[in-house]
Image (cartoon, rainbow, N blue to C red; front, side, top):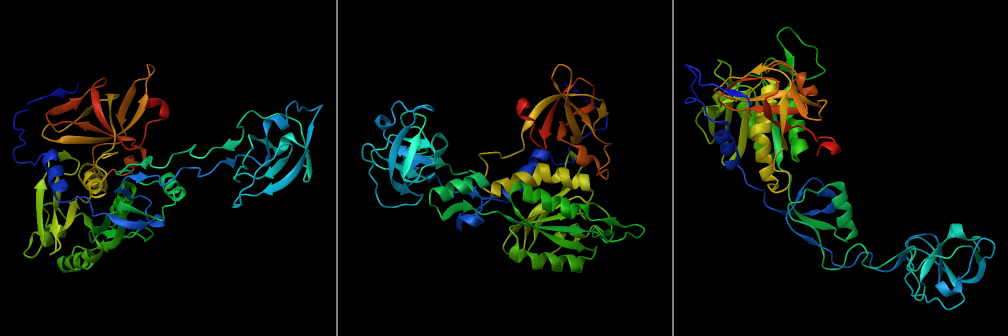
Length: 429
C-alpha cells in the first residue's frame, strides 16, 4: 500500500473533501420525469418501465430455411443414390396468411419465415433436393422438427424481456420493435449546455495569435457528456466579460437541464464565472476549494428562477476532465435514472509500476495506462507529469489512479485503486 504521512504544516481543514463536493453535486439533481417516446427517439435513454412480451415470439411455427415442408414417413429412406420423389402441391411464401394443410404423400415448397403447414414435421433444405417446382427429388432425410422455428421458442407471452433501468442500445431497440412496441416509457436524456470561457480561447481551426489557445474544454466536455448519455450542446467561447457571460447563460437556460462551464472559477482578477455567479440575482452557486488534484477550484449550484443545475469546472483541460469524471458524471447518471446498472466507471486494484509523489492534503487522480507484467498482474504507470495543462497524456490514459488523502508518495509495487476509462479486454474481466 502507498505510504501515509502526517507531514508538518499540512492541513485539510480549509478544503472541501472530494466526497462532500460530489454529494453537493448529486444533491442538485434528480432523475428526469419519464416520457413516452417514439422508438426511434429512445436510443440512449433509460427505461422507466419493465417491458413484458405481449405475445409469443415467434408467433407461429415458421420455416428456418428455404426448402420443402414434409411428413417424415413420406421421405423415409431418401438418399443421394435413391432420392424420394414427391409432388409439390403448394407454394408458401413469407407473409402468407391463409392456412395450408399438408396431406400424405405430398410436399409444399416453403420460404424462410413462412408459416409451416399443418401436418408438416420438418423442412428439407432446398440444397438437399433438385429444386423442383411441380415435383421434387429429395436426397436426405431430415430429423423431426428440423428447420422449424416453433412458436414461443424465443419468448412466451407474459415474459419479462427488458427491466426498468436498462439503457437502450441498438439491440434493445430491435427487441422492442420485434415485440410490436412503437413507443416506450423512458427517462429522457438530460440536455447539457457546455460553455467555455476565456478571452484567450479561440475556436479550433482558427490561427493562434500570441497568448491564445484553442478550445479543448468545450469539445472535451461536450463529448464526455454525450458519452454518458446526455444531449450536449456546445456554446461558442465566451470572453472574460461579465455582461456577455451573464447574457449567454440567461439565453441558454431555456434549453438546459444542466449547464456546464469551464474556466473562470479561481481567485484571479478575470475569473468571470465566479464574478457573475457570485453576484446578486436568482443564481445560487457555491464555490469551494476541493481537496483534489488536479481541479481544486470547483463550483456548483443553480441558475435562474427554474433552478437549473450548474457545475463550474476549472479551465485547464486535465482539471476539467478529471472534474467531469469525479463530480459531473455521477450527477448526469442520476438524471438519467441509471443508478442501478453502471452508475460509475468500474474500479480495479493494480500495482504501481513507477514512483511518484502526491500532495498528502488532497485526493490525487493520476492519468495512467495499464499493462500486464510477466505474472499476468495489472500494472499502471503515469502517462505524463502532474501539470493540469499537459493535455496530450489524456490520449494515452486508460485509467485514473486514485491516491487517497494522507499519502505523500507511491512506490513501485504499491497496490493502488484505478478508475477504468474504458473496458479491460474480455480475458481480464
